[in-house]
Image (cartoon, rainbow, N blue to C red):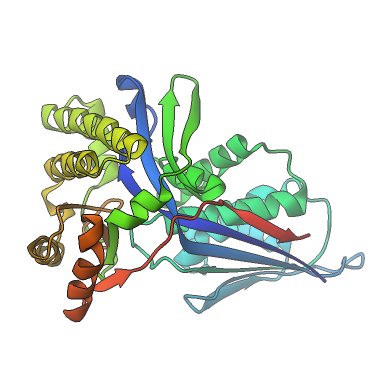
Length: 354
């Protein structure tokens, strides 16, 4: 038996989320989505058994360790056949749909007949808005790329992960989560006609860690921004949505400037602009609990805040001066608020074994 392990970080989106959906970014100049990978990891383990004898039907098993669920197919053929009627109509638990879809795709490159067990775990809570499922997707794609020797470049692997996840969530998927999971660090993902590339902030991790507090509401997202509704509204030329996106673009410029100059005031300005624009897109993006915690944080010296991901639950960040960060964190914790300590993950997806 052989083993392949992969580990990929989740992320905090700082500015420009939703702009990474094609073709929204094409309507603006010099567009970017800015985020940083953090040490909340998704991990994948592939256990590959011995080559099966002729006539044997090697099984494939999927397990989500953190959710304590699993599903076993008696053969690869059974896995492939399960998609004929739509995998969502099978007995496969929804949390394992992505596992099965990604594995099925990579089987097209595999020429072996051996049992396979796919085990996953994710430190980021489900629905936290930290891109945990996308980090898991990248970890799984990377592990299966090594196993099957699929001839994908890193950029092609991101496109595969995006396209497969789109078919699972049934709406267009952005790309920012995959870039941070694959490459790590703090970055501006620049999106242009015909290509995407990343601008890496090499010395800004400490600046982010000194000023950003990550809070988990304890609630999975259940409202917030509906990306498909926003996407459709933009294409339909809804004036409110178009105006909000223009403000989001301006916020990305300010946050990028803040990171380049390591300017706290510019960071506050940019995050606040982003936050105000997000609330125009969806008034339900912030729950009453979020707003209550943000007010408490400001009472102890914090300056601004914004949700992570689509909001309506999950995580949000609070921005505070360096000398106020730990007092604010301590004050929130004393009232039962779940503050997640984090470090910027400088390294993206890592692999071992094979």
